[in-house]
Length: 114
Image 1: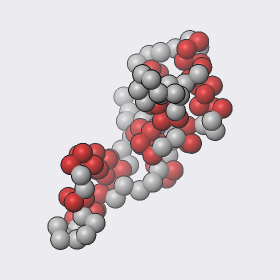
Image 2 (image 1 turned 30 degrees about the vertical axis):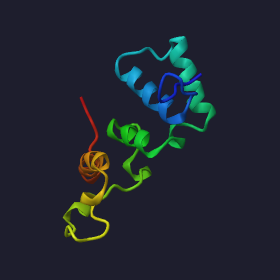
Image 3 (image 1 turned 90 degrees about the horizontal axis):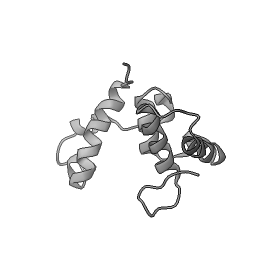
Image 4 (image 1 turned 180 degrees about the vertical axis):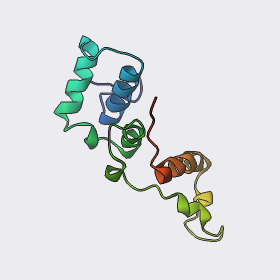
């Protein structure tokens, strides 16, 4: 009923939540059969709040979920001195590229509005 994170993946909450969100933002009708099956998968698994933090982040960005329900992504970590053992600059390069903008958006509690 849902979608996975790649073409051969079984349905996952992360894949289904993000794909459902994208399809609806792109104008997919909520009553289309293939979209309904994704929504039913999400509901059967406990709702979108049962997904991973990355999917919840997207839900917060578009205003479908309150930022209070998301794990903190403190942008203040970037202000620590570079010698600090948990400085984000010590993260793997791909983690740094994700953590910096996520920290900014989380810190400002950004919500998209059109």
